[in-house]
Amino acid sequence: MTVQAESVWLGSAREPVRLLMWASIFGAGALVLWLILGVLFFGSDVGMKQFLSPRETPIVFLTLILLSIVLLSSSVYLSDSRGAIEPAPSGFFDIVSLVCARLSMIATAGIVFVMFFEVVSRYVFEKPTLWANELSLWIAGFVFLLSGLYAMQQRSHIRIYIIYDLLPRWLQKLSDVISVLLIWTFAFLLIWGGYNEAVAKFFRWETFGTAWDPPIPATIKPAILIVVLLVAIQALSNLIADWNKAPEAHLPVDELDEQEIELIRKNIEG
Image 1 (cartoon, rainbow, N blue to C red):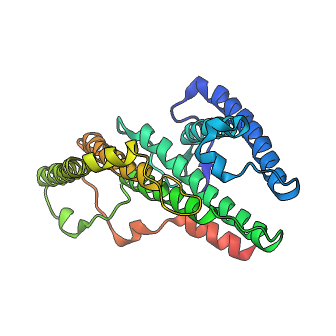
Image 2 (image 1 turned 135 degrees about the vertical axis):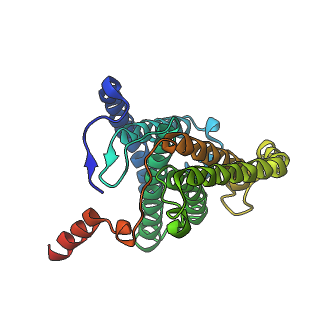
Image 3 (image 1 turned 90 degrees about the vertical axis):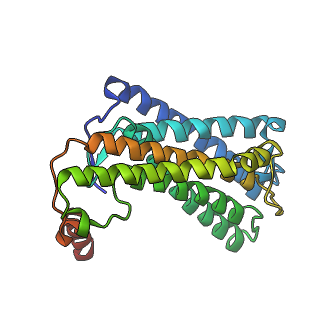
């Protein structure tokens, strides 16, 4: 996806965030490389098990801190650039959703890295991991949730315009209000019904019950409720931002992305 270089919202803070991002990437990368080399070649006993209780191992604790800074700074920095097929942020909540969207994109690359490491470790060094599958599932759960928030911000969720386009503008606005009310009703009922269970899982730090035993239930369950609330807030933000927009006609040809088609054509020809 082609990305435009101009700042979207950071302004003068863009350069400091970029420097922080690269500094944390180099620092975290060096520590991760040191840990990997230690496991593969030097018989180090510092593995992914220690990442579940990092305070007991200082180098693991420092690595997690730097990785957290990498994720946060990278998500913020990348959210300051707009993809060619992305509309400009217009709602009061759009920036938060864009930061979360960039985080999900980085996390997707993280899943690829984990799977690549597992393949190399298993078939090249004959040292299969006990954690790659669970870590991939753990990350994918957050990617799935955050991508839903991004879809809402981009208005790319499923919408049926056949009847909507036939309505007068005032009735379209009424339909939008009803849709947002239904989203908020769903979010309220889900949080109402799942809050106690989510809190219980989190405070007893419920784990996955595997050899690595990560706290997937303890983190995913609360994340579901939090992200559903964020989706509801984003829906309200969209409603406010689109309230005074002129009526739009939606045609099947609008679903075609000419830039993406041209990019695919160039890649095939190349």
